[in-house]
Image 1: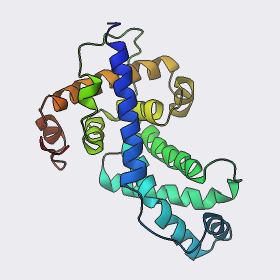
Image 2: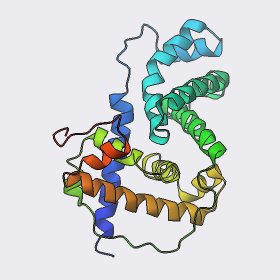
Image 3: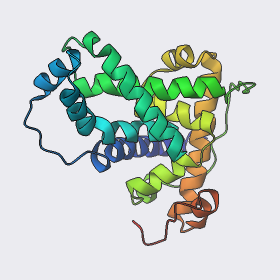
Amino acid sequence: MSGNLPATSKIVKIVSLMQRKLSTGHHTNRYTSLLTLEETIEGCRRGDADARRELYTRYSGAMYGVICRYITDRQTAEDLLHDGFVTLFTHIGDYRGEGSFEGWCRKIFVNTALNHFRRHNPLTGAEDISKATIGRHAQPTAISELSAAEIKSCIDTLPEGYRTIFNLHAVEEYDYTEIADMLGISEATVRSQYMRARMKLMEVMSQISGGDADIINKRHPKTTIGHNDR
């Protein structure tokens, strides 16, 4: 088992980087503003409608990408995007200019997705495990050849609970204790579900990197991936 752990860790790093690239690059709005970010934020604090439209235009694409890490249903993701902006505009006065504004926004939309997650409570009855066996999976060199869209599709095949915990830890970089507090579950459950998510993801990506794109198409018929879509 120990021989597979370094490769697994490298693969998780590749996946997390590709996930960030997909949400901050692929979904970024191509828009040139006449207002500075500071002017836009101040306008939103005053309740100015033009400033709010400006902020939505700047960040809706990237924040939709954040939500789609956790929510695979398009209509639900769009509803949560709306809910997240309502929260953002309501609490924008809380932003004090400390740290990245986009990072502050990201936390709001992650929490919006988690609120939806908690209402559905997909981890009810989740099994705690102290040990997990990591089998032989794809190597980092094979995984690195997958496109960001292919990796996103692989992650989307994970059950909702696994997908949420994987994204929170591997992509958003929350630690196990923070995730346990966010979801109202034990730290042991977080650890076990993250391990199971990693193993399942390695299995799916191993099949994709080996040429079996049909596993994605069967589970997500609306997302067709061909062997040459790299």
